[in-house]
Image (cartoon, rainbow, N blue to C red):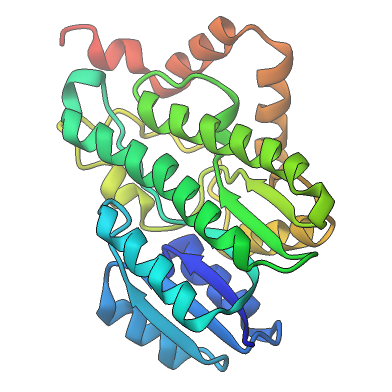
Length: 261
């Protein structure tokens, strides 16, 4: 039986970095899941660990049927699952097509649930699950509303599931990156108005992933990298969310940007 890691969103950004950093973990195989087969093939050439490339669109129901069938056929021992697939869009509610908002929920929430629940039966005791949430999970975020709400779901889901799986010694870590240097912003800024432009700090993807893996190894139910990120998460706990939202609006100059719109 192969000991494997399953990583979604593996073709770029945080998902690709997870593939690179677990390359030295001694897995028999890494299952790299993403839509872009060409990028997956390139990743395969960059790693020492054998990579099974699996081109799936996690917004499509058929993708989960295919993944479930593959698990049944291969019957692997999944020692690590990392759910990185997801995206966000900046903008006011009427600037983001409803279809895009629905797809954010499907990718960030529904796909996370399905991939997790399909994989757990193949995970031995002491395995690791990492779900990519966001520092956005700790507060409501105007002009980034749907994304923030989906990540609040992911973090809450992760922490609760961590308790449910204690009897099997499987840890679930909700990873909460702050602004991170990835291609996330190319998609997020495709709405009609670049609502969010003030990035107070931009962390490296390598450090975010390294911290996540370290926290997962310790069995922590959440992982936050960076002083600014930790301060923001703390402030979101002690200040009223109305105050936090006012600070956010001022930081991004959003009242001025939208006052005549």
